[in-house]
Image (cartoon, rainbow, N blue to C red):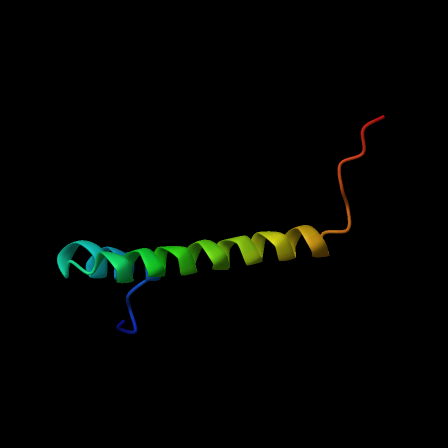
Length: 53
């Protein structure tokens, strides 16, 4: 992965242009885990919630 490539582009190149489908799907899972961790951290550190009356 070069310094200007994003992870999504890297996943596309590995999976479809280099025909490394397993490697591309591993990168996709890594992207999914990173997004889920950021989402969970934002929910945990966001103190306010929805309060229905």
